[in-house]
Image: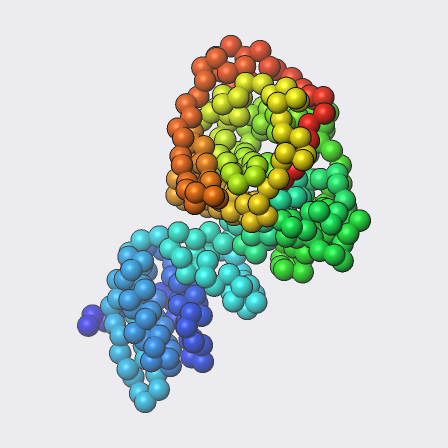
Length: 81
Length: 268
């Protein structure tokens, strides 16, 4: 796991699929290639699905970590538009 | 970047999560203006799906009123709108589906004197007309104005779709230089149509429109897609540009719009 300062942070706690990914994808679209998004979420399903979808869309997952009993932090770097 | 409301995020979520669409593509759809000729068999599904997709502005042009015999296939109308202008009936249906969409209803016939003005501000034109004079008028106007045109036609169990990108692919006159004589066109009693057929063809036309707006995928440019409902068969026929096309060829003889005489009776 590499540590990278995020260019944007979103909190999508309380959301379920597919809105977790909708919010994450829109946040990624607002970034430039090379910038990094940090996502705070509390859906176990989304913690598995968002990284897979991000990679399907050609983005780079830098981190996927359960930080306490309920929450995960994902860090994604934008590789392409 | 478009700021979506929570309702819009939910409404368009299945678009936004597509890599080919995303928030940016959805914003393009919201900014698009589509001009639909005919609010009948084809215009209803085209307008319905483009409304659902969130196309920002949809103009509908049709001179007819809703009749009982339309309801077997023209899905934007109902028994509650019998006798109402079709464009008004469809506008109510579309606005009930999606209040984001501005529907401009024009109850009129298109003529050579007004069509260029009417389509000027639109990005894409869709032909769902039911007669050859209109079909040729719309084709000629789109070629002259450089507007992409998604053309559809249906009869009995067979339908056709093609996308005309003026001066980049063939136009309708490259396929058929002149309208057929009125006597060769099936009369009303010969020209039945399976009610779901315009749904298939209209959905294909709406797909072409969205690809034009998004700039994604491959268009039916230089190709005529022919669907046979009885055989459940799609055929693609390659159509080259005609260098001697009177409208878009090297030596153009059609330089003004033409209003062909009526006397046709077709029925999409």
